Length: 82
Image (cartoon, rainbow, N blue to C red; front, top):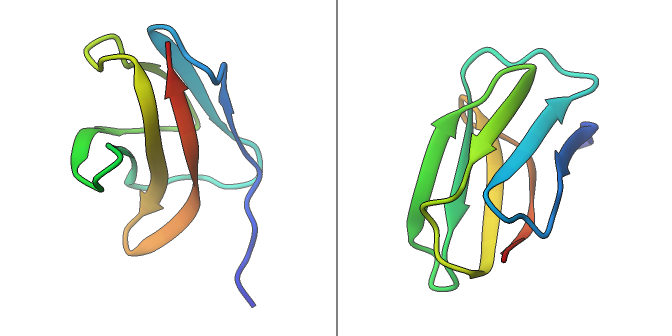
């Protein structure tokens, strides 16, 4: 059984900054990765219990993200950049 973690990423759609909060998980070396529509990684940063993430360098568009701690994918989804 795959555990579901409660992780908030808001706002989404995002203008420049988004916030990531782990509600029921203590990350050790968690990474927030953003991929373009072709699956190329365009952004990555280490995230902590609560992190403000600066996405201002990305052009507007639809992206996909995942949050990974070690080899475990904690959550994944779609992100819209305005």
